[in-house]
Amino acid sequence: LTALVLISAPALLEKTHDPAFQWKVYGFLDLLERGTIATNFAPFSCCGYTWALRVNPMHKRSDNEMVCVALSLAISQSNLRPGYIINAVFELSVFNHSKGTYWGVE
Image 1 (tube, helix red, strand yellow):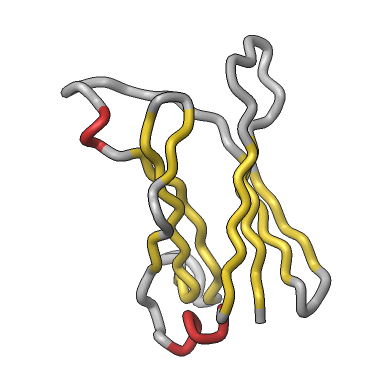
Image 2 (cartoon, rainbow, N blue to C red):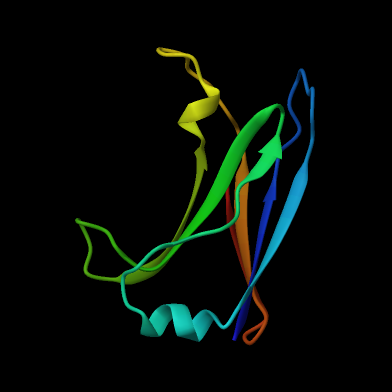
């Protein structure tokens, strides 16, 4: 089973940079078999900052018993001055090749 994860920046009023990144997760079933262990992908650089994608294949929300795949995007704290805040708008989407289904959220 292969999952495709896409990240893109949506159109902004004052767009300064519109990157698109794509990850292919080979052996996604192996991640499921490992249980609730989240996986971090190699860091990447965008807009002068270092970011990383994290995939948790067995995420369980506290208000729901349903297990789902959770994606998160994190910025490296080593790039930031103390007290510095970054507001980033991004979209994470997943395409399941085995089922031909797509899901995305901004």
